[in-house]
Length: 216
Image (cartoon, rainbow, N blue to C red; front, side, top):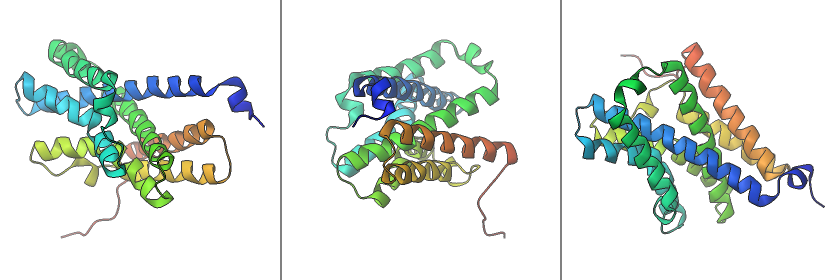
């Protein structure tokens, strides 16, 4: 029996929507990576490398870990093109991008994190990965690119000490998984999981939430 979701949104439309939002997230993360490259004084090549790894590093690591070879970032040209477009936009219009409100960039980043977290977990489930590792693949997809970026810049990855970043991805992936186990339609489960991840991340930034740490 078809659910109301599949009745209104056939599978190809769901996939097209997810691809569109996925590419938007890729573009936003590419901009963040390129801005980090400018702040570090890198040339245009270094800037484009950081744009690519920030946008697609997490998904590439996930695909390698779950055996989806070649990784989607290489197999589908649209991902690499979107990442390089984001890096190129920063290089050409750096002055204009700097005028974008910080709160808007944070919001877009949280949206990208949310999408990547649930999409990463969903892809792991599709290839037969068990629930717990699938949740971790969601976290890797959402936070992996920023981690690779920070490693290349020789600094402690921001996801390890920022306001509940990777944990937000973890919560969103878990919510999606629980809803799928409850037989909720895939698209709706992913949407709700992404919404929870987004909400947790934004509230954490607003309230300056951090996980406990050892005080010296």
